[in-house]
Image 1 (cartoon, rainbow, N blue to C red):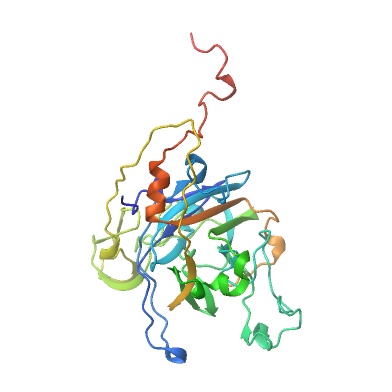
Image 2: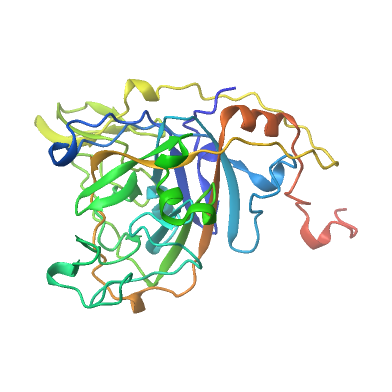
Length: 365
């Protein structure tokens, strides 16, 4: 069964109007070692199918079910592959600025601190771990590193089209790629919180109290992130474009350059590894019984190779944001074999009647 797709309806996971897509590229190999390791460019586009947990009775009982603002999904993955999370599509549906708190197995991906109730935090004066005053540039001598300004990503500071996260924050401008592994000792959350970790990812979306300004789109190059939903892709490069030439984006749409002269621009491209089949043959029957829960294999999330990626400071204070998340997406990642067993066990209808409260009343002529 193939789980790669460029169909946003099968790929994007939504809660309220916010959405996220999980990509499963190859894990990057470290270039150099120790202090000599070189940070690399972004891994390629590799969108994966997502399935609503509530529709599949064979899902493990330990998986969170959707409730209120929380939507729970599962995504088939592979041991040894990398992961990155794309939030750019959210801006096509949400008129406010957006902040995303990312939990990886129960720890914050930016700070490494345990995630309990989702909340936006900023670290201005004191180390959040030791509660002691920072040195220069948020340096904590006991931690032996400089803390980020906040525990979240935000569109207020992030350039258009770069609202994504490929790994754990290592230093300013550098992250270490998320890598799935069966090796328990390599798991970041396993090392930090042990048995309290979970085998899921969580994204809590917070909205600004006011609307965000309309984006400035550079039509000359035709590759900017726009409010209509075009989004930047997975790795950057430089390419010489002539008038009328095109590049393909992650959803399969063409982005055209219509200028009058040849230019060299930074762009996002689709690699050969991301040319996948777009169809999936999966059972669509509805069932009325409770299928036996599938026993799934557990994978840890390790810190892989260095990648060039900034987590940009939010220029605003916390009072800029709403205090409660607008939506929370839970991603239960599961090996492909277990995912097939869950899907083949059957699907139930959770959409209900399209007639709403009129469903039992006389209707029509």
